[in-house]
Amino acid sequence: MVSEAPPFWWTKADWRAWTLYPISFLYGRIAGYRMANARRASVPVPVICIGNFTVGGAGKTPTALAIARAAKAKGLEPGFLSRGYGGSLDVTTVVDPAHHRAVAVGDEPLLLAREAITVISRRRVEGAERLVKEGVDLIIMDDGFQSARLALDYALLVIDATRGLGNGHIVPGGPIRAPIRQQLRYATALLKVGEGTAADSIVRIAARAAKPYFTAVVKVSDGADLKGRKVLAFAGIADPAKFFRTVDGIGAEIVARRSFGDHEHLTDDEIDDILVTAERDDLQIVTTSKDFVRLAGHHGMAEELAARCRVIEVEMAFDDPNAPDLIIQRALDACRERRLREKNTG
Image (tube, rainbow, N blue to C red; front, top):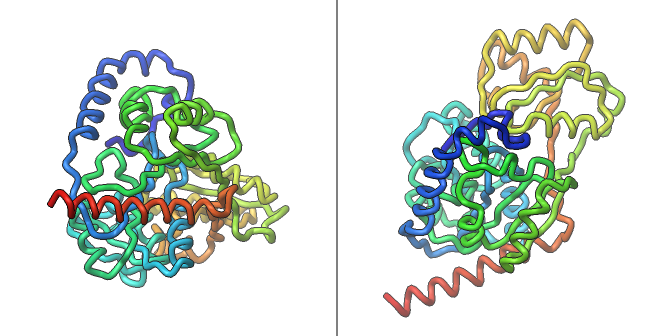
């Protein structure tokens, strides 16, 4: 799967998308076939998958965190399952945020591990089994919808209301991971994040397919003191512009901004540029929590940058506060039905 989304994916389809169309068509056929014919292993606890239609960020991690918090409020013991993208470990591992660094386990798993037990595994079935052994009674799978080898009890597809489906083409001509109707067939519900209209077409298609959808926005949990402050904002996420809009939204004045690739570890030269620019222009350095965890645990210039960063923490706010509880309850019910079917056919 492609991890970096070229800019032309997010504009009206041009000659590049159409030139790549034959490859996109083939990619889509293969991806759709794999989804339709995958053998999915079963585990004895509910599995909620937080995925998206496209390559790139749509808000999966804050959504997963919101679901975990709701589960804990219900007295459940949730656990996160991640592939650990961006990390070097290729063995199933329980993430220890006090010990592991992002270079080993990935940045998103470190964020998730602050909330609940988190396991990374290139083989998600093995990772899910490890979570069950660790005592969780609800698995929240971060991404992996299109390649799931687990029986999913609830598949929530997150879509950004500003970016939508991009140019509408399948990888490599566009950001879509598999044919939309094929993805909708295996989705339980959609979550539209933000206040734009780019996702409206897919929401209408989902509604015609009798798929429910929720709406939410990403809110800053702190940052009022940055109002009016001059800042240098940097972000290495799938859509850095989204972070810059967030900083603008809290009233900070972005004097300088630096964009990097998703999951990218900064070089000393890049860090030096940030530090020197901020010092010269008397700017407060602000960044995302995902960028910050990639700096944590390092020494030298990375340690200096981490010490000078102000992290803008965000959280997913559902328009319907009961939505996370509804999702969890639906997953619990689906798991019971799945286990009963397995017992009757076993």
